[in-house]
Image (cartoon, rainbow, N blue to C red; front, top):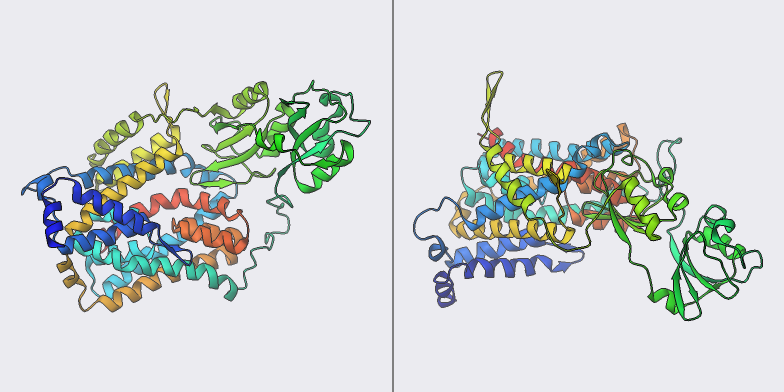
Length: 546
């Protein structure tokens, strides 16, 4: 092993890339629905390799460089956090009931920060161990990354984060699985407010094929049949002879035609009574039209529900999915749109153009990424981080993390640089964010040698116990606030808690418990604001502990 480590030490970047590859693979392994995640797995591998003697002297030399690969990864990651939160950061606060989801997520973070500082003072843990405790309890890579730039002992921070991360991960999953039962939270229950409207249809939308047999439907154009208003269903395509055709208002149905209709189960039953019986048509199934993606940017569309917009009735277009940040929402009539939502829409070409004019703009189909929005954003973040503000006798400098976060929020909110729209596909955003945190975690983890465990001797037990409490108590506080004062449904409460902890594992557990994708709505609203809070929490806990 030592010979292999010595060889890696002589090849620039080889050791760092090996740590990233192994750590990412380890982070994807799951056990009973739990996984360390890319950051957690990479940090464990980095600490192991650092203890075995891996170094970056071949990459940087003996001197301490002003800019490292890890610093570059840090910039990519923190800027990406702000950029992804930008479109929903303000709308989650002021967009209808979303403020309640944000309050719950904020309670989680504020209580966790208070408890971490309290335990840090009681057990005299110091700023670095306390910040690592908070990062691990919340399973928050942004908290860890932001704290690393300002803490007194980055090695102790890394080791504490690695030790407490599994505690936080297991704690979140167990809380979601068992606490709702103890509190008698019924995920299938409706809203607490009697006057609140149902939030979802009685059944999901689906596509079914039908054969045209009813005499009243034969020989008449669709604009006369008015099937959308009569049945609630939308026709996507038609199979006639050897051809599969699109449908528009002038399409005339003929006896024996097979049509593909989309709607809820009750609506499809009505459609069958009007048009004809359901059939199976493999050709219609295979020739599913590709949806166009429309990003919501127009102010007149923000806050309106799908039923208010009436895209089906006005433009014969159907929204089949809504992408809000990292989650995909099932569309239902009462769902209000937010700025930055990306809608998957199917329909005739003219209708799609009309829908685009009403909602915002088409997402480019190309996978090309506007790299300028990242380069310019990081440049702007570096400048903002050096701004010195002196107001009311208080001197303040945002620092590198604050500057990058602010630049990301601003550019993410407006999604443009002058007349140029910033086009960054979801896959590219995920790649940049993950690569950034993995490079940063790998480098800082390797540099935190095994001797940094000395800082935890005598406080290992209190640190792990405190991490468990910092994971559990904020969740209990958030449940109390949500149910006692905000009168929220359990499904919204737990979705908001998962978003507040920025925990994908929590979202998966809540969706499984609720047997529904509905928690994704409150998760997305809470996550957008909480992702900024957890980043700010890193430097904040360092400041409070000094």
